[in-house]
Image (cartoon, rainbow, N blue to C red; front, side):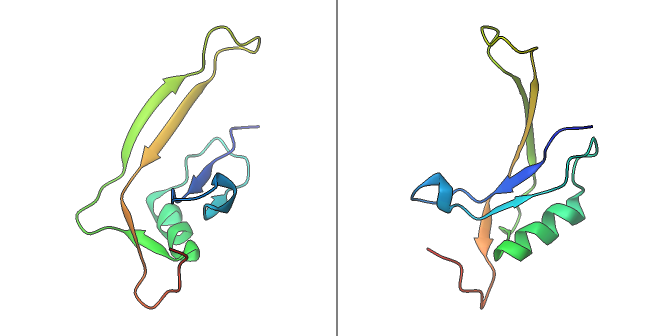
Length: 87
């Protein structure tokens, strides 16, 4: 079994209200096409001229579980034209 992949759009307000997409557990990172489709399903698209930026981090060593690596991708997005995305 692999990691859980999740995409969310960061917006003002409580985290529980951020638009979110979660993929089934898999070792495969969601492809660019899958990430694009997820953004569209949430009412967003990549902002013009934006590329995905990837960073890798590990959890704190003081946690009792084995060290885990977090792979995080970020990109600027914009609401889709004609989509009533929440402000």
